Image 1 (cartoon, rainbow, N blue to C red):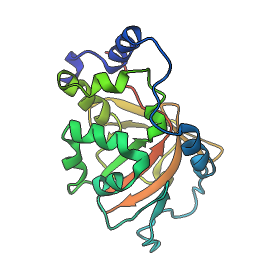
Image 2 (image 1 turned 90 degrees about the vertical axis):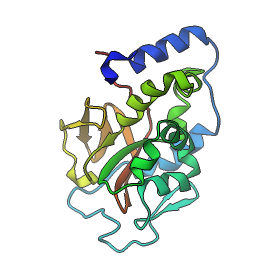
Image 3 (image 1 turned 90 degrees about the horizontal axis):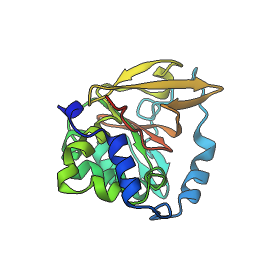
Length: 206
């Protein structure tokens, strides 16, 4: 079981101690966050489901159009801003799940979110011996149901695919997940929905 493994938060702390240095960066994180800054508010009384609204052009994430005719896995693969999440999903074999029937809700950290992790953290998690810890981390971002922004409520707790819970916050039209801000909500896919977030969610230590 995942709970018997070294908790991800503890693994990150260990990696931090072993890799003291500047924060690892692989891209212009500030530019990604600035581009998403105006998308954090939503109207809870309006339908934001792009499939029902007929928005076949989908949602722009960076320079990629993520469309409702594609699966979550296909949309993540199409977005350069989600390349680190894609790499993690492939490493854990969860990419095939997210290309399946679903439905799923994925709180998807952007590359800028992954770049906020301690230096060397992702490199450590991507090692073969860390696969089960990485699997638990990725599953902590996935809900096995389809939840649009309008379905989320302040104080709501959701059980993730790894069995642990995350907590939703909704204040002033802004959505948070365990304190991470939803930067782009409602990227509707054929088998669920993606909400982009600005931090990687770390499962609690047990």
